[in-house]
Length: 430
Image (cartoon, rainbow, N blue to C red; front, top):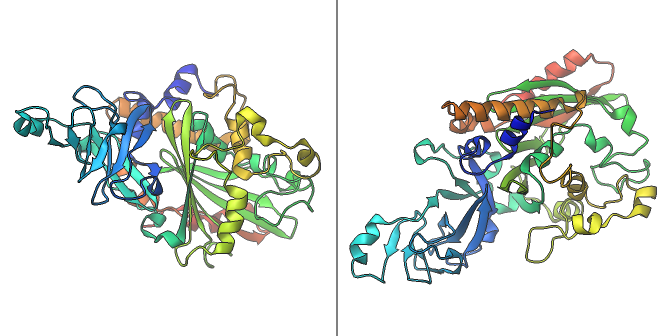
């Protein structure tokens, strides 16, 4: 468990907080690119890490992320006119470009001179890999963009997704990196219940298959681990995982072995605080070699994308309606009775003693080792930054090119040999 001071440090991300300043040293996804669907489209309200902002796409297609309020009289820029390479405040006509420069000040004779001295707060923004990325830290500390594999793939090779979750960002992150929850939360009542998707296991299998991480290591970019468990066949399954500072969970589908075979689909999840009690969860799946087929999209969307309230990124099944839990389904078919994979996670993380979990009251065991390492890394990096030591990871984009995956080995092979085979999948690509 954490102390009250540590829990406060690790969960708060507003301006001036230790964790907030750490987040602001990285490029973060803040929107889906499709939310700004065309040049000169309507501006979009955007709240990130307790800051109220406005996003817009100018006439040339460039993305701007600016203060939600005009620096003149504090009027809301959301009502602004997006026109001719800038966003114009409707109150007095002041107009700003994507870099925050004042292009026009028509309500004052001295405007032609004075406008050159005026700026609106603006953060660098780039569209890459289906997301809008922003850097919200000090200009002199701005790092290069990370080199995620999906960043330069065509749209046909990837699928991007977003949902809003009503809890602190860390609850969502820790829920994902909990290695034992899948054997319960995402399982089925018996082995005949699995509906043909590669998610979930039967309730009768869970206790024989459940294994804890055999290896957890701190790295320059975050944490990496290997988990090994026995299958019903004469095999062991080895899974390789990574967490990359501060919010990234890159993953891969299964392959046939540590040294050979085609890696499966790429898969990454990213959690960005809206404020301290709400976060955005972004996900992208991709295939570096070929377009994602309609069969994949249909199966993937049915099981892994919750239905949303129209016009929002909030799920239709939510806390107010108990996530539409079906108790008959729970009794006879599915362990939770909640018929969607992400909703099963959301149901158990949105209220862990409230939207900001009190980690002074938890009781951890060895199954929590991965999250213990992640917490230590976050707290260490935030405290070092508060003491003037800048993080190294954002300025080494090659560190983000990590390999994840899983493979099978004979059950009688010693664990140490299995982990030696796993090492090539644990290291970063250089």
